[in-house]
Image (tube, rainbow, N blue to C red; front, side, top):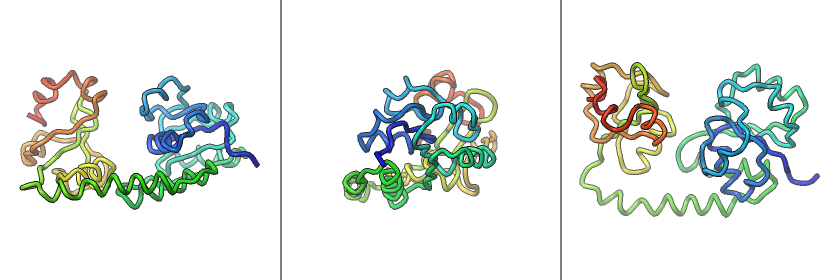
Length: 219
């Protein structure tokens, strides 16, 4: 059979990997959390990663549905599989080993060679070793996923954000839980991070730098 030509990618890591493998032209739709590279924002969106609509995806007639294992709900994934669509689920872990494994798995689904990209990513990762070892101390970093309404949502352990912080030479300031949780003012005062890390769109939605720094839980 020919390599996939109509791909629906679900999950930012899946979308970015497809593009990094030079297969952006095969994408016919992505999920709403896929925002990079910028050109893919023009593609149709099939819904949120964890709340997938089955009919909209099936109606696109993809010849490959590339899913992050974070996609859901489980019932929707079961319906998509039962529909006869070619579905490939890829473990969406964090860290170098998980990232290179993800590249190889996505490349195999696309019938491409993922080894060169995986090797390039590993080489880039290794370039960080020397400058990071020269740091006098590791800064404490808190990743804020959103802070627009209510309590800020921050990253604990075992997230992509936590892995990114550690890879960049920082220490995740938030410990004691996995995933994301709302941050209370009391907890925020006790953490005292050196750096607040946010995505640009989340910073804009929160009202900008001054609004974030003025939030009771982050001040």
